[in-house]
Length: 227
Image (cartoon, rainbow, N blue to C red; front, side, top):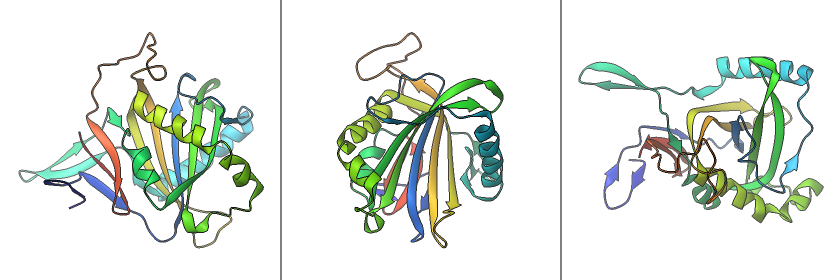
C-alpha cells in the first residue's frame, strides 16, 4: 500500500523515483497570467524558432519517455476500463515535497507560443527541485535564488491552492549534460481557477469546485488517487 493513515488506501497509480532521478520539474501552463507568482524570474518571450525546437523535443519525449499521458487503465469486473483524471488538485504536494529528498533551486516564468497557433501565447511557470545531496550550493544562480526561495515556495503553494487541473502528464527524460542521470517532469495544463490568487475571485473562477483527483508524494514515489 502506498498511503497509510488510520486505514490503508490503494493509490490509483504511482511512480517510484529512481536513484538516477536527480531533478524534478513541476510545470504549469495557463491561458492567462493570474497564477504567475510575484517576484519570479522572467525569461524573454519564446521565439517562433525556440517554439519549433521545443515541439520537436516534446514529440520525442512523448514517444519515448512518457510515464503518464493522462489516462489510467484498470480492470474492473473482468473488463478493462480507462479513466482520464480531470479536476486534479496538487494542494498537498508542496508540503510533501518540502519533507522529501528534493529541494527547490529555481523558479522561472515565460510567455510561450501556443504550438497549435504560434500567433497565440500562454503562460508557463516552472519550479525545479534537485536531490538535496546533489545541490551545488556554490553555484552563483543557486546562491542568488536562496535569497528569495521562501517567496517562490509561497508562490508554489498559492498555485496549488487556487487551481485544479484537467490535464496532467509525467515524463522521465535523460539529463543532457549529466550522463547517467534523469529528470522527472510533472506537467499541469488546462487550468480551472478557484481564485485569481488567494482570496480574490475572477470572472471565470469557481471557488466551490471540488477536485476529483489529487497528486501526492510519499515513500519515494509520486501518486495520483481519487479525492
